[in-house]
Length: 138
Image 1: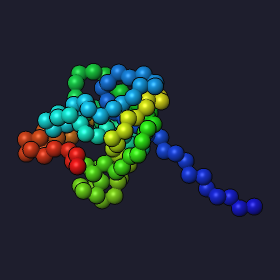
Image 2: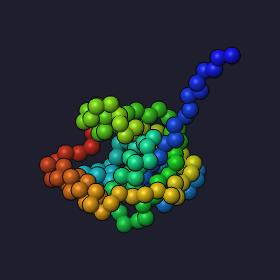
Image 3: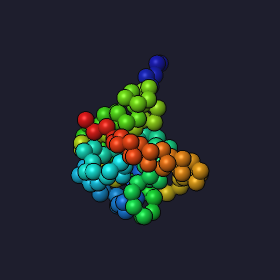
Image 4: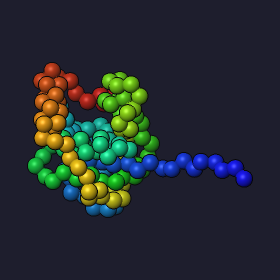
């Protein structure tokens, strides 16, 4: 008897400071958390908790950091901000979509980055902002 491996559907995460409930939709059209905070053309998700943690920690605003388990409602594509346009492959398993993500759960037990790591990342993002470098949205 031979067995064929079953490909599992990945778990997708979205890090934010928005207070959402199961069944809510995360949609495009809100202000971006990065750069000049212009209206975001895409929404982003990741198949790694690490990338979602950065999303939650770097999200704009003073709200509580949250990570949701989400389900795409349409096609997703590699996030060019974290893939071949800037880094080889897609090591963070980060994606974007024009279609909403449905909140199907919440991660309640996750570890944030150290204050030093967070400061280094925020300083880097501020430097990019000052240089006029925005997220790739084309």
